[in-house]
Length: 537
Image (cartoon, rainbow, N blue to C red):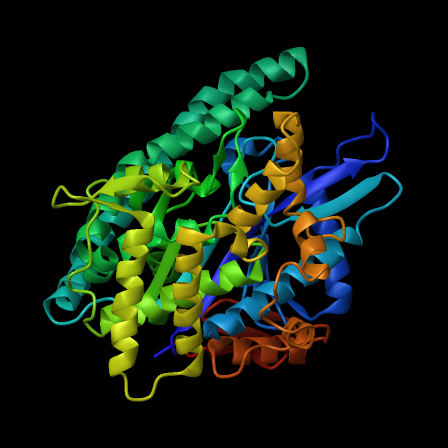
């Protein structure tokens, strides 16, 4: 119980404020390059085995610069994605998440110069209408008995076909792009200049649309084979967890909603994130087949294991330590209860994504959603069902970890406060805190001013509104500054990150290059290449 691997990937917004009104806009890719250069001077860093813009840190975590293909030529496009190392327990994850926040924001601020100020925002949206999020990764049981057998047979029979579909889609798209781009480039050479941004965006959309059949096929395949029982029992909890983990957002029309992420989800299962966000994300399957192409058959073989990585992309980024601690801790509890057979009678939602949007749009928590049997229930009611099931599960346990008991106690107290006195949660839950600040900004405050307040809440700087509340003691903390400082430099003990971080710290900055991934580390010594496989549990 409470002993599974867990990690969090967070997408950070990069913001540049020019000191002059007519100041030049520095591209986000250049801002990230500056951040990385400052980071490399202070902490051990190793390049990733695969990926041009990916790195790993001495504490075992990951870092990358990510940009969706439709926005390649926009200078403000691209964001920073930081991944915590693999941890055990909600508090350890939170500690490494806060270490990541501090490390990245500190080195982003160091890029500020006479031309402007660089700031990181831990937000699920920005001022340009782009949406971001926080991905959670949990070690979980794929299935047992017949479910596990079906999964393994599907890997052998169905996935090669799926992989061929993606290859065919990409090949067809590239050929079509070449045929379209040829006259455009000839015309550009004759008249001068380069193809415009609209042309680049059209090309990117063309590639994404070509992948749509493979996306739909893959999503259907996963829906009926991967984590089937676990997903069915977990989904209503995730949909209603928004009332605890939502960061809140002021919309363009002035409405206040709980989750920016809610409106952007398009399906329950997905294989790739670009343009097609889903609740459950299975990119590791395509990565497994890529490993086969690279000759790494052992990584592909791990897809047949009973324990696999369950990735959730339904979440938003949290500023409040209390909210993030509850988000991870309650999910760990529910996963334990499901695998112990305690949630066989879990409610089922008739239209999960529609239910998520309804819950997100109602900060008064009065909305109800339709269940599979035709009845209706509110988010608080469904959350209480899961909390009560976890209470029974812990009461029957022989040796229950103290952290599990603490998480359940805080969960029950939070649900009581949401129902009776939400103001008690100011400083603890992001959306409650942000709504309080917005409501107290004054009735005459314009929507634009409220939206600026919204964004300032997420700044990872001394001027950030949430961090100012935390410094004033209004927002309680869960981890101590000393623990965060330790997590900046050293990996957690007893996880794959222990060996990864140790090897990076040993060889980074030396004459022996080292390359890393989540599953292995390659040391490129003069005597030859040494591949170190990392334990996956």
